[in-house]
Image (cartoon, rainbow, N blue to C red; front, side, top):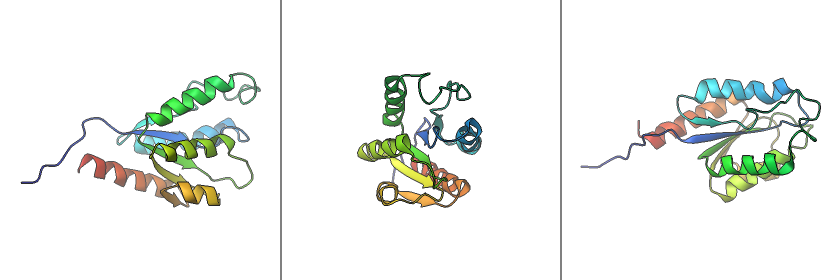
Length: 149
């Protein structure tokens, strides 16, 4: 008789994507939608939570680089997977790129969505889809496989 391991806790999912160079609504809107559709399957780690994104210095001086980077790295290290927003072709994605690279080094599942398909993103992502809904479907399937149902 085969035994199947069933996990009792939800895997953790980090929501990586643009915060700088986009409006607070652009930074948080897709994250809200992802949370609504994935919170049954994952514990959501959202780097925008608790941040004052409308503040004029939110991406320049309101927080220290150490506060942002070390908090985000700790969340990524503790996660099982990343959902990566790459829907803009006209912004640099500096932080997102570094988050993806670090997640890849830590062997996390990386599911990206959007139009930005750089060589670096294609190399590091396990899956790239054209839409958030498709990426959510991939992550739901991955969570079901992990949980054995």
